[in-house]
Image 1 (cartoon, helix red, strand yellow):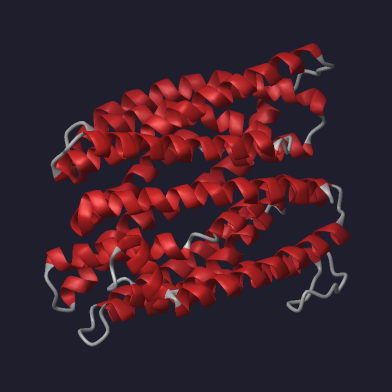
Image 2 (cartoon, one colour; image 1 turned 60 degrees about the horizontal axis):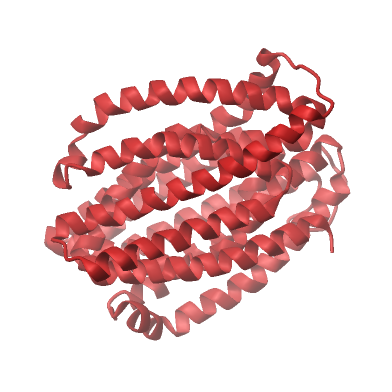
Length: 441
């Protein structure tokens, strides 16, 4: 078995158990917060992710690509530059966030401590990103897998302990749910930093060559800037997503409280079920970025073509099985795990969205590895613009409501997956039927 599939298999196994834990976490939150509380949690979550995203500056992706493409003698020089500037950037960002976040209106509806938890996350995520990027680039997936699993198990333990032994009002319960995220990320930071500095000491003892800071940051920023732009765009649109959907539902004639509950079922229940198998896609993505980057630098188009064929076939097999189970057993799944029969119809309506999502994640890794980040950004802008327009228009129709929202989401997924796929096929010289045509660009 190749190192690619060994690493991917390890990530998939640990991610599976991690997703099982995530499933339990969402069940606990759905039970403890209720549909309205879950709606509140899911409403503010994209905004928090948008803020925290700035702390990563997509360093895991850019560092991973750099490590995979460059000779090991340049790794120490790059890491020294990144560590120095991450400290400076994190201090600056934390100060700015401490000034701005307390005045962001959305936090006024939540516990006053929530905004400070978000600020605390910034340095945690910043330094975790460096270690993640290094281990991804070196394809030491055991450490990545362990950190991912550790995060889930710590979060679950905190949730069970706090909700089992203490009683909270709704506002405090939502705060506690966010606290478990911060607590688990702190433990992951300590683990990854320990493993990283052990490796760092070994690198210092090896043969190293100095590399210009200007050259290093040119390479890193050529990936980080467009990738961060793409992530910010996604985070912004996801932050708008709850308000867009709830606004459309209110316009269709239902109450604001009912709209919040329906969004809670969509984001907290239907998405939890539908995205469960995506751990396989994310495992592929983690392995594909350094693998595709290295193959493309070496102009190994045969490997790129073969890898795409295999990933698409594997995704089609597990994706079809997964959405088939979700569609035909939606009632059983939603009642068994979430005690909500109303969410079943949403799961059934969104099966195309879930299936295409499984394909889109590894294809985005391909675009990053091939240096087609601008294409990925344009694809996301076009598909999201079309999808959001359709979501609001169709969702606001009284005869469609949530069905209209599902149609809009499905249409956006079709556009995004199609644009990604056609661009990759053209770049690596393969037809849409996955047969080589030997036209390389």
